Image 1: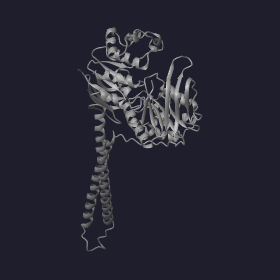
Image 2: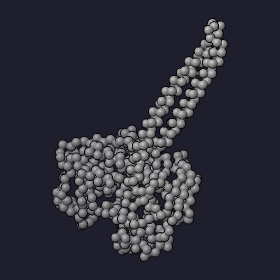
Image 3: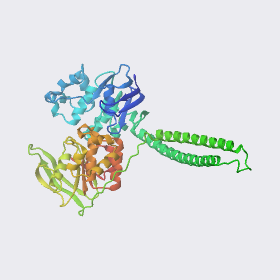
Image 4: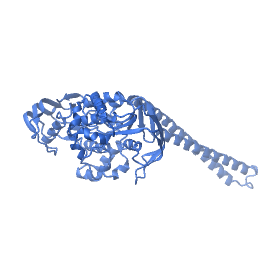
Length: 511
């Protein structure tokens, strides 16, 4: 076991005046199962790259000779055509096949995947192969960056069980279920600080709720004390001004009944009163500073708004013995699906990747006269019906089309720019991001643009296809609260177990 010590770390990207990290210090053990969480765009992946020596920084990162390895490995376009076993030496030099096969077997994956072209592997198979290679070495401290994105529930469960049996890694993830299952320490990237706590996500979250509650309570005390000190300072200041006025207006010839020493007495009294004001001002400044330090990491999550429209029909989507396939294949993607989506329901579509969840959604969109979506699989038999006049708000899992600037995106899509920016601010977008092209956004920030778009479109039915991929845990909780408050009718594909269990009214399995 070795220790990684970070001392006074400060880092900013070239050409950027804002520091990603500023004077940060903490320590972690390489024997830990360390979960790393924080808001989108706050520097989790950046910190991983710093450990790997990819960027220059000030301060010190002492790794005691620890060798790092990083998931996911890069795969070039030319490598996609190669058998997987030929690519592995590029990821990890000296990697022995038998070790990889042993790790693959632990994830219930057939070793024959190693002999297939990499491009033919599913998301789940690629993840498992890369993790097998990652853990096939010795004496490495592993950095695992979002391994469960795009994986179905079955694959996530497999990865969860596998990682729970391992140690010596940093897991960057927003998946609360996997963070609870596999970690024994949490590294938190707060708004102003970085801290390390023993335990999993849930224990950290419980502690944070208590800490934030205490901070709010103490903040109220500070505010009351500041107001009390200000009132006392104002009162004392008025007394000082009154004393000074009496000193200036004193005439010893006319006021024979007053001692000639009265003027000096009044001056001394005024001086003392002014000193008391200065003492009050120092205490006020000290209270304000303590108040600011108290609230620096407080997550004040603003409530989002949604105004779902009520449709006259009770049934919004109807399928009876529905089967379809692609025109390029004879294999049925969905077989004999009978399904009704009722007004007020929040239905989760569940099943393995490739079972037709996203395809079914796209078919619904293509049949809706208010949605501009072209999609034409072959309906083999059965029926799929939508009522006329149904308005749908759709969030795609694809973010690749987001390019250019937000103002142009809003104009092109008929969206109110000020409302868009307001929602993004509530989702913890910093103002500086609004002036950057969207191609420079993190995947989580891109997904938030799509979520904000979906919230701005009035609809009877909200269809969300993997909306939480890359979304930070604070925003996930924010979105959960939104849905529970406004109760929109929804059809959702997402594999976040915590999210599903909290908001689903019904689960439909596709196979």
